[in-house]
Image (tube, rainbow, N blue to C red; front, side, top):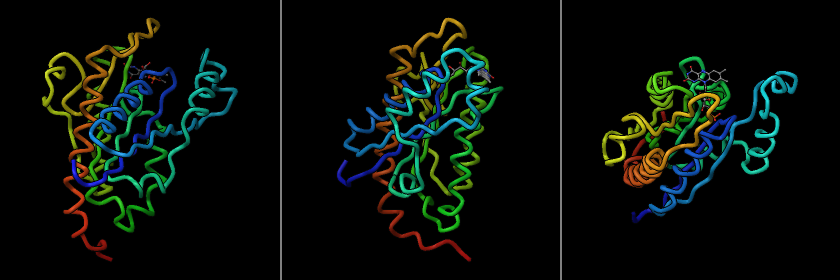
Length: 213
Ligand SMILES: Cc1cc2nc3c(=O)[nH]c(=O)nc-3n(C[C@H](O)[C@H](O)[C@H](O)COP(=O)(O)O)c2cc1C
């Protein structure tokens, strides 16, 4: 990769599955030569609600110490953006959606148009909605004018893990299984591919004018 490229990995995670994928996506992008920022969106609910789920407060505190919250500047800075969220009742966690909804001003200015973007997710069961979650995020990326970069079947591990829409892992409920080696390989591949496409799109983006008024 010749051009300097910036990649933002913005995720929400409660139990660590999506966090592990986020780190692998980031690592793949770094290996491709990108500068990477990894950010965790914050909780939307109060402490009383968080206390109902054992370990939630502790894991949120740990992750919030490790990762800054994503900002508008992070999205502006990035040439490629990877968004990760757990599957919640068949679609992406609201915490990530809330971040998207802060991006209205950037959307209005066309600041995100032509940037490469991808998605990744976790669920507790293999047919609990992984693919629906990935696909459900695509319209938002399209509205923001981003160029959606799917994982496809560009790596052999995609025949054993992930989805063609983005990296994924299954945690199997109370078993809390961490991502498999193949899950992480797919996520790293996604980061590498996103960085490569983001770099290739830089020349195109320099030709895009401001959005029509
Ligand atoms: C409110 C809620 C809704 C969930 N909905 C689904 C679901 O629809 N399908 C599924 O397979 N798992 C569902 N899960 C399980 C999570 O997707 C799963 O535990 C995932 O690994 C969490 O990712 P994390 O460890 O990064 O937080 C749900 C969990 C919660 C708390």
